[in-house]
Image (spheres, rainbow over the protein chains, first blue to last red):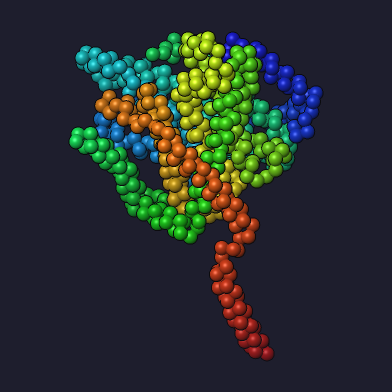
Length: 247
Length: 339
């Protein structure tokens, strides 16, 4: 059921729902005109672009740091001997369950308020899907490839970059997709909990002054950013032949 | 004899990893890289957990979190699986509702808190709606894509025998797509668990997230924070392990879900039979009943905060009277001196 073929129908339905919203005016939702007006107001007076930029910057930075940490870590972990893997598995299980909000509280005490707790929180939650993807991708590679490469007296670096990583890319990409989705989610939660800039802070601010139309406008902006991020990943996956390969 | 040896060896290996973590924790704490009041030692944390259990009603907090999780995941399954089946029935509906559902799946329910409160009112339902909202969407998408991936020959065979719709569901769709549905349920479980802790931090009277928030908000009581955190992690590991075990046991013909695919230990998953499922259902019902009780008790305690401290009240009354006497004595002395 390829959604992209029927993409137009889905978005037309969304447009239809928005028109319905403008006409029917349910009681608990503000009218669509006020939402659009509030978005304009936020854009002009409150520097919406600046907040969007900061949020996207934090999410992207956290995601890339997680990528850089998780993939080498995954390669190292999957090169353990089986006994070490067995003893390491409960440790990974335990630490992957650590809630990012807990980490936020702890890091807040150690490092103080600022950029670091939020980015560390995003890094923490983005590491785990990529790590699991890397490990399960590398361990699923057919050992014939690895044995053949070793029989050619391959160095460790070439082994990793030419055999292990390309073979694990489908699983790594699945992990990347999951953590891409998580990063925006967690970013909003982190900014809501304590911050002075960013989309989450704006949402909390609008909640505190009870301007519901601002809240809905911001939520729509966040949803649109999420959809754009999804589409970017989808286009990367479609265009690159390496990623579309399925065993 | 060899199987027994390998299982014992596996168990010891698994424990050794955790023991190594505990030792490293203890070493970091005693060396004192971080200050003592923000990084307690392992044994201080354990002692704090014991103190929480005996004094601070830890049982109530654990049961409230478990209750919220159980009810949340059950409702997420009840809503998600039928909606997923309906969504997969017709291509047109799937394409129509696709983007809308994707937008809904990305919304953080905390951003929409005012609207939810305006609709339902504050209280337990707000948290439950957020939890169920976050849990439904992975299950929904996994069901729809799982049913879509069923071999069309199976469906054609079943339809050629004129099976009614409800029999199609539980004889063809659920067993064939069950693996994907269960994977979706596991993702939903993780998101639900995260949302429970987050929701308890924001506004609740009980639960493990509430414990962390209370101990970290005004002043940082490190052993309590680390203790509650450790409990959350252990609870998460147990719940995730339970769902993985169920998935390995119910779908024993598929490859076992594990992190490292070791060739040596094959599928030792036990087949899950009816008595096992009965036990699981009884335990679930017990959690629901006992947890609801605990939540009510927590709400009662929050409204009458002095119930727990009646003896402290007596002591403080005595102290107050003593202090009054002392102050009167001092006043009389001062008066004498002034005169």
